Amino acid sequence: TQLLEQSPQFLSIQEGENLTVYCNSSSVFSSLQWYRQEPGEGPVLLVTVVTGGEVKKLKRLTFQFGDARKDSSLHITAAQPGDTGLYLCASQPTTDSWGKFQFGAGTQVVVTP
Amino acid sequence: NAGVTQTPEFQVLKTGQSMTLQCAQDMNHEYMSWYRQDPGMGLRLIHYSVGAGITDQGEVPNGYNVSRSTTEDFPLRLLSAAPSQTSVYFCASSRQGQGNQPQHFGDGTRLSIL
Image (cartoon, rainbow over all chains, first blue to last red; front, side, top):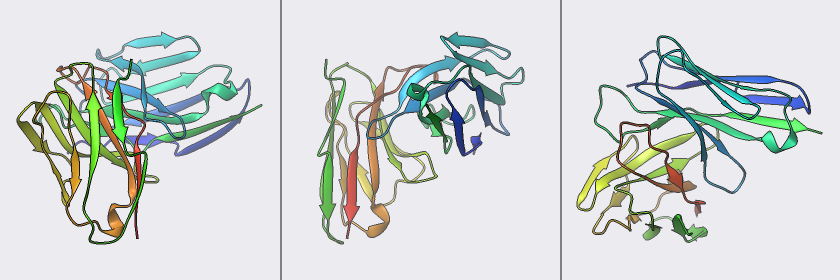
């Protein structure tokens, strides 16, 4: 069973600072998704990474997929209060039947003005 | 543009009661799923469906039943509620794909079992 480990669990920073959150597994990801969840709402997809070594940018957010496709990171440059939320990574085991998505426990990010 | 709609938004039950959480999507998505979210544990998959008439168990299926009679609807049934089922429940839908299709989530049902 593929286990997605996210770190850190909690991150509190000042506006303008940079931050990085991580998602790791002992197994290879077929693909990996990053979601952001705000209080009282469901998660919303930020990006999907598929190819080892891939880097995707979404404004101030940079997503990296490890060469071995076992790890991924999300880097936020010059964080703003609107970046506050729970960041979740998700994937599905490559050896299991399609549809059994797994989520990491999430990183709670708080950006204060 | 409704997307994924969950009802009710909040519910309080007594131990042993039964209820159905409703989920409907208007995007003609083949895949639908139910998750529960507990503090510090992310989202855990309860049941999922890859199409009408097809359902399968996820990571934590015990105490829950599902059915998928139409593409649009995927209700989750609690047969005999237990305090351990107190949680926030999310329904999601997506197109078929190899894990690279975005999942669209509802806003959740907050369920308390007394």
